[in-house]
Length: 256
Ligand code: CIR
Image 1 (spheres, rainbow, N blue to C red):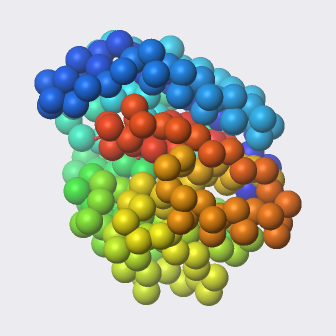
Image 2 (tube, rainbow, N blue to C red):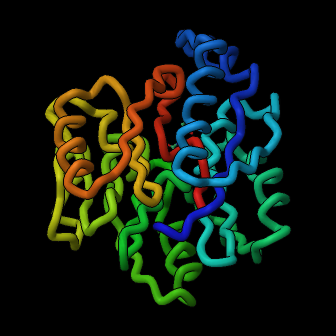
């Protein structure tokens, strides 16, 4: 975790608003841009170099770059996403190709980066509406050379595994127990988000920095205590315009 030094990001395209308007969800693009810039500032403050992939109007959801690739130790796995998102990967993979060996999925596999949760020694993969058995298997093969164990976790109460649980570092997992069955995780130290704060589990730990979502006071109190004890800097970010698109903090970058 402390060795991360680059974040890939992609600013929201103008089509992000039009796409959600068709589903009767109103995105304020000016606010979305401001929130995205605040997020990128927090990544910089955490010591990351920012590599920005140019926005692409053809792909309304492309700001959620996390879903396009899984990166591990000099290799990158190109994912296969929901049909309306297929193609977003091209520009990301072209960028990664300069420094990483690219691995592709078998034809029947689907996998979203949001379903991939790395902890200290195990990688958990959500079996969700976005990630199937073949996708989970392909992730296992991809991480095989790194000798990482991959454990599958059923996800049917939220979009992705990381909508329900994230790795806080220091041997600690953050979980919303109403969204996922915690018994799948082979981890002793688990913190729980507060009841009803369904967006709170998606945090992002980078070195001695921890990003969390504004508007979740109960969970924030737990995280504040966790952070204070370990001398972490907390960044509380309002991300309303991305929550409307079913996204949050991890989904807006690939940290590597
Ligand atoms: C989607 O349906 O794919 C986007 N609207 C939301 C993706 C969020 N991604 C993430 O949390 N990793």
